[in-house]
Image (cartoon, rainbow, N blue to C red; front, side, top):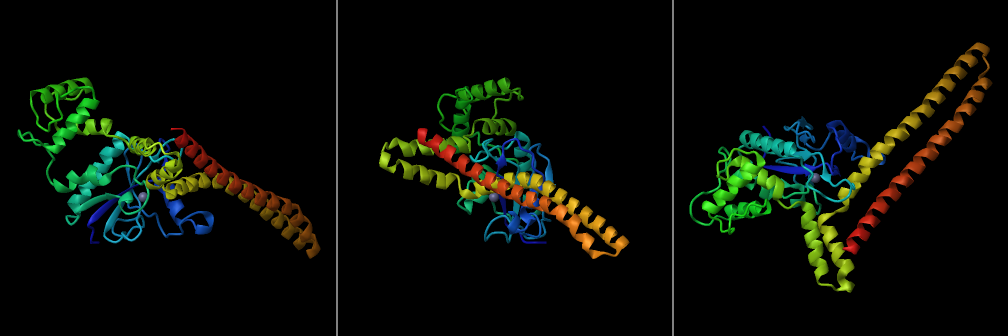
Length: 349
Ligand SMILES: [Zn+2]
């Protein structure tokens, strides 16, 4: 069995709500570099979690993956579909509740199968990029720590940071537990009950697994909010000379070009689909012409006749080349415009 000591979580860096299959991602990873792919022999991830929460196997888990530079040995790569807002550029935690559940389930299974796993990380912990658009380390820390038994928040009357955190989430939910003092007292129980009642959970007054899960899913700050906050902080200094540079820094932290380029590859792949159809039409016509020519030459024994149908096919080849060139130019322009629009939006804030 391959020695595995860490799981690394990724996103497909595709727009929120877009369905992407293992086959598509495998295409991105296996297509030659000349066609915008990575030129690998298989998909880089071991598992892909679709928007509906279904789990799909990629590269066999027994094989070393290709998902994080310098850390593929000893790791398993999981990718959830999404990770970018509908604009196709802005990093966003787009995980659906079903995907969140599926991730926890898969991670728990891996922890059980590979007892040497000591860490669950996100791609961004090892590269200057936003992937997977949420903090996997902190979100899954308790899974690793409490492996084998269900994590239960402390109910002892000593301040507990985790309880204080949940109390703050309760406040966001509009059910104040008084102070976020980290102690579960009558007010916290009251607020918890009110929240559970409101959400149709079983009303226990305890911060049980289901309640904690829903609270965190609904009220944890998203990566978007974090970016907004960081930018606001950067602009707060109100120094116009530094403003441009500060935006650059924040963007560099949160929105690395790999995300954009992956998105560009995604839309390029879609466009390439159309172009390939046009090209194969041209080839079809060409082959047909050759076929006709072959039969004609055979019948008459005159090789000269081959030339005429071939000349008929030539315009199709020229059209295909022009269409491919125009397509590439359009994609490049689109990516450039999206970046410019984003920069303008950030500048306005
Ligand atoms: Zn990644």
